Image (tube, rainbow, N blue to C red; front, side):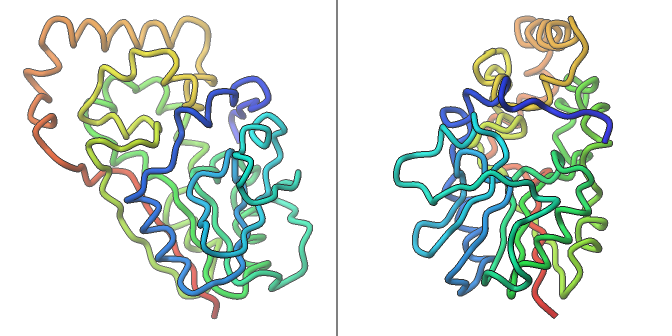
Length: 250
């Protein structure tokens, strides 16, 4: 893995800016099927955990665990790559926007499949399918991100079982603050509080974040962004990078 994010330092605002979007949550919960016991790995502050079944969370960062709501599922300190559970310990396992932090991702994916009797559901991104303007204005960050994100076909292969991939449209008013959420609201990325809950920015060399933000701000101020991409503001959703990889037990 080329780079890692220190969530003890950079994870302090996730509970505020990385809230579960209900439309994405519905897709994740449907993929879990009728599982009654669920392990959420790389659980962070608890986004997308179902509330209608037994859930146990696994999260290595104390900063992230401390932001979990009082009524959230219990969380233990452990790593995806070495889960402290027996084979087939739970009905299902899930991992949401986290596998790019695992070292290596394949180890954690194999662990998910090992401990789950039924479906394993992975919510992740296909970086090359972000909107064109993000490919342009976030170019330096995406260059760093790409080696961290396993290809979707490799995620499926690592999980094994009967595997399928589902695309999820990103709503125009998405409440989860990953950067594609702002595909029609580019101004949001000018806000340092919004960026503080996106791990990509923590990986950039000094000065690069400022250059990227200044470039986007100039394009918005001049009208150049709207001249080329303003049609996006009239759309309700964007079929972009969001993916669910779902592995059913063999």
